[in-house]
Each structure stands twice: as C-alpha cells, then as structure tokens.
Amino acid sequence: MAQDIIPIELGLPQGDLVTLWAPRWREDGEEWEAFLGDEDDLYAFPDAAHLAAFVRTAEQHDLIDHPAWKTVPSLNVPELIPDDDHSYDLVGVPELIAEERTHWTIAELAEIVGIVRSLADVCDLEEVHEILDSVEGFSLLEQGTLPFTGRDGDLLWIELSEAVSKKWDIVLDTIDELITVPDVDAPLLEQTAEELATFLEESAEAEAAAADDDLDAVDDADEDAAEEDDEPVGFWAEVGIDPIKIITAGHEYYTLRCFYQDDKPVFLGSDGEIDVFTSEKALIRKLADGNDLSGTDIAGMSTWDDVLEKATAGELEIDVDSDNTYVLTGIDDDIAEGVEAIDPTQLELAVELLTDTAEWAGDESVLEELSSSETLGWLVSFVLKPDPTRLAPSAPFDAEQESWRKLVASFEDRLNVG
Image 1 (tube, rainbow, N blue to C red):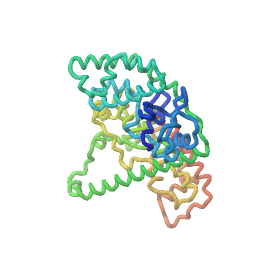
Image 2: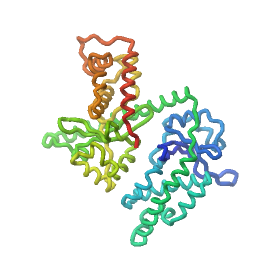
Image 3: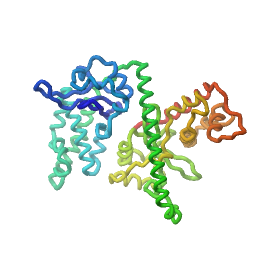
Image 4: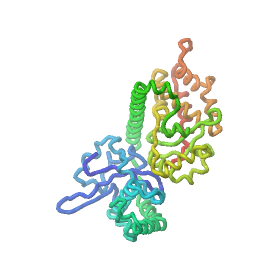
C-alpha cells in the first residue's frame, strides 16, 4: 500500500464499508490528517473492487494532494483490501464492552475509539467529541487493562459502559450520515470485481493446499497413534459442529454447519436463511452474544452451549478445514468452456453446499435441477462421476451455465449477512 495511505474497513449500521485513511503527516510545517472524501462527504464502498474502480479514475477528492496519492491508482485490488488490524467494527462496540475486560477486548475498543476520534477531528463532528470526552474511560483505553483494575477501575468501566449504552447510537448515526457511496465506471468495476474474485479464489486454493500439506505432514508423523485412536480431535470435532467458509463473487463469509439424525444438515440460521459473517472475528463476537442466536436451528444441538461458553470466555478459534471451504466463483465460466475446464474438487464441494442448504431449507428445486435428467445435472454427473463409456456433454453450454448461475443466485439470496 502507498506509504501513509491505508485501506480501512468501517462496520457501520448500513454495513461493512471500505475507504482510505491518511494518518497524520507533516507538510509545509503543518500537520494534516484525511480520509477519502470530498468536503462534507466521506466516501466508502462495499468492497475493495468498488474502491479500486473509484481511485483509478477519480480526479477530485480530499486525498488528491497527499504526497503518496500518485501511487494509489496503480495499486491492484488485493492491495486495497483492509487487513485485520485496520478493520473497525463500530456497530459491535456495545457487545464488545459487555464482554469480560481482557487485554484483547480493551485493545480492540481502543483501536475503534481511536479511528472514531480521527473521523471526528477530520469531519468536525463536535457531538462525537463531546461523547468521547464525557467520561474518562474513553481516553484511558490506550493504556490497556491497568486503569480498569480494582475498585476504581470497576467504577471507570461501569461509567464507560453506561456512556456506550446511552450515547453510542449517536456516534454511529453521526458517522453513518457522512457516508456517500460514489458511482464508479461500470466496465472498470467489472474488471476490478474479477480481480477481487480471482484473488479470493486463489487465496482459498492456497489455504486449501497448505491445509492439505499440513494434514499430510500430520498423517505421516502420527500414523501409529491414529491406528490406536481413531477418535476426532480438536474442539469442533468434539462438539460435532463445523465452521465453514463460503467464497462468492467479491465476498468471503463464515458460518457454522452440523449434521444430525441420519446426517441431516443444519446451518446457523433459521427459516431457510443462513447467518453468515464477513470475518472469523465477527462470527466469534456474535457467538459470544449467544442470546441473539438462541432461535437458530443449530442452537438445538446438545453441544451448542459448549460453543457459546468458549466464545464468551474469549477462547474460541475458527478453524476452517479445507473440505469446508466452498468457492463458488468461476464455476459458471468453467462450465461455459466445457467439462475439461471444470475443477472436479471445487465443483463437488459447491454442489455439496448447495444441496445441503436446499435439504435443510426444504427446497427440492436444487436436487431437481441437478438430477441426471436435466442438462446441468448430466454435466455435473459427468464431471464428478467420470465413466469412459459415457458420451461427454457437447457444447454449447449456455443453458447449463445459466442454470448454475440461477442455483448460486438462489443460494446467495439465503445468506443473511451479520
């Protein structure tokens, strides 16, 4: 990334948005700080693809005169994806402050309050400054856990919690009202969206390959032990619930799934809608606030309380197995090219996700579309169950591509992004 211009993600009431932030720098003897925007508008975008399409063509905004701006338009899309250290979940502050006072909790609160102060400084948000200055606790977060220990620390934390409970919505609404999502050039957005999708797909494949290598190494080292004890290991194996990752065009989601009663799939969600989250951290935070998930189908699992307890204690980690990583991007284009272009492993996992979801939701249309009597089902069957005696499907594959896209679109409609 260009030095001193940083992509950041802001979790706001209208969703998770990405923008650019220039921390304080000196120029001509003066200190400056800025965000991507213009006058009273703060520019933000739904993903790095939209941000990239904007910065490659924009001619007027508040960062145009920054010393490092000239390198920004040439950045590729992955370089504009905010990292975990620059993702600020403003909406999650009330839930975060309700958690146990740990080093991790206070450090994250300090980071969020820090970026809010910067926004208030740059955008002249006097009401936000008043709220952050109303109690001492906001200014002490950067010192870690020490100010919040003992009797006096308890009082500071209670005061801080009450301020968040009563006034944080004002902070959120004030910042939310600043947001403008500029229009971007449609053909350029199509190009950057493809760059983002390619990056996410390659990342998932690299993760899967690394996971396979790790598994191979473990298998070689523990072969004797495995023969003696074939029981599953690890927390998720013990509770019988799997974290899963879903990669769609330009997005990456995390959720949970399990199987019960003759291997019937159950997802985190209800009424045929899957609750998904844009990061492992967001999923863990939601699990720590287990009351909001009490009505989901997966909450009926006997081990569900074990998951919530571990999340509340700050001990839960989201470990997604390569077999539970589902990449939906690119399959439609591969189908259009023909059976030789299709990755059987990727397709098999995608079909597994679509059929599991449909079974859970009571939707028979997916199995009907994937039956061997349908053109798409015949193509899928040919790829996943190769038989040299079968006649290969013949081009063109426009109908099969369209059918697949409809299945994926229907699946995406079931995703409830938290």
